[in-house]
Amino acid sequence: MPKIVKDPENWEKLGTAMHKIGITFMTSFWGFAAMAAESVGAALIILGLFTRPTACVLAFTMLIVSISHLANGDGIIKASHPMELMLVFIALAIAGAGKYSVGELPIC
Image (cartoon, rainbow, N blue to C red):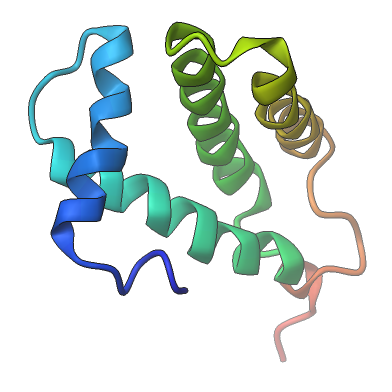
């Protein structure tokens, strides 16, 4: 939540990571989208709601973070954590939430 309530200048700064893959427009939007995906997406995965689409969005976000670290010359050490998280989110997208998630509750 602290990421989302920051000012749009921080969103702009984070959104410039999309330049690494050739997307150079609406950088504030992309920055806010990444922050929202990390904040809201974490809560959705914990609850087991919309796990597969949320995990796909988070995996894409971690891909962009990894590319950004590597392109900035930070090296594999700095990029390894988002890469690991990307693999975790891909596994969650494949496996789903499981039978004990909120999304599996019977509706009366």
